[in-house]
Picture (cartoon, rainbow, N blue to C red):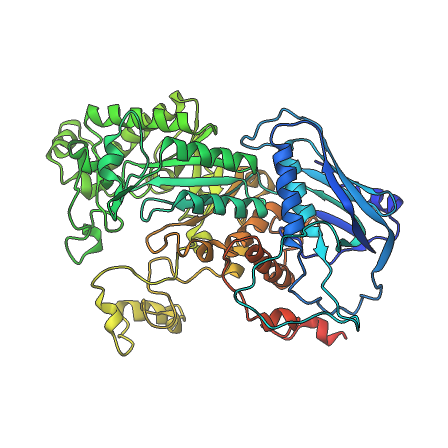
Length: 626
């Protein structure tokens, strides 16, 4: 969708427009607005063509708007150029009419999600135009965020304030469109995502998440215009997916808790996929292999290596058998391994209609294979290395994925670390190296750099007997490290895990929303190279998270990534989007997510939102100019 001629068109149609100060999240590519408060008529309705899933979306957003009745928490930011006071319109908005160009377009990789939203004054009907249903869903989300409710006023015209009652329930008995309005009309939004792949990865192997919590996460994703739920289903710790062709994997490999097996059934998968589809969210499964497969050993010990042993048999990290507790890798030299892998991939691919399938492929530890005599004998006979075995396994796995008519995604390790000849048709998910390493090799890339987008980081280590936590005084810096730091003039930057705020785990510190927001996925790439970036995903590994902490781990930090991927790190004038400008919007958005049932964590004291700029890290320029 082209945005280049929009300014000229707006000048003709809406000569009094000024650039709106908006609380929308994510911020649209372009939004122009006026100065009129436009009431929603009491008979307001949304209408559109007879398209599958559209009426469901209309009903959902109608209920959301009438029940939410949003009154902004964030006070207006002072600005020296705000001289025009909003005026009430004598007309109302009676309807929003939806127009879809391609009514049959399914939800798929790189589908068009653009939309144009027009809210006029004096005409009574707004228009939401899109090429596909999926653009319509994004436009409906924007429309829902534009609608606000007027606060209740007392006889003196002041806002009614009552003491907080923790037992008070929302009053939805008389829900409707009374006292709902859109500020700053007329409004025109012309919007499209910067990246077509805007995802969230959830690990359901380290800890189990009930289906209802996954569905709530998908709701939050849709609110934030995210469109890919990357489901990291299995790992060494558990195999929670029930399969017809290999039922023993979950029968033995799933967690058992309180006499219940923690599994996802075929019906669960179907419900999650359908629920997500209706909200414009694709579900991509990941079955990680050949590493991270210790849970397979509970039913198939004969096709796994180094299972059931401690991951770190000595003090030397180079002697590890896995990247973390929970050892086990699939044996790459046995035919039976590939028979079972083929069955698993074929069935899982049939459960998920999306065209993409994630095959894992990360963190192989070659010493694990060395623990198995059959592997050692094979390597000697064929003069093979661990890297050779990894290549053999991945080529066969990728063949199974291709046979299932899926495009494969794997973690970057095999290409950026081991330089394996993986086909350029395979998409790489980059998590450790700069994106350009994979892009310059010619791969399509999904960005998930742990320094920015791993949301589990910074909560401390989880080792059971880690004595470093007992230190009462800062430990001495190792001499070799101290010398290197001093040589480079950064001697004050070294912190041992539990001193100086480094966070106590491998990927610390905690990734604040500002850090998440600041990730420039196309850094140091040419315009041509950047075209190989499909988008990105935030990742939540679940070693220290279950359903009790899911929302606060994800939101609103994942929302910061959502705006990064939808709006882009730079605006249409190539100006980097500013964290200070985003602060009031994400502050308000967090409270709105709470209203929508997402238990997002606090970002600042409420005082900060009610006292604009007073919590800025540096003295605000706006104060200097007032």
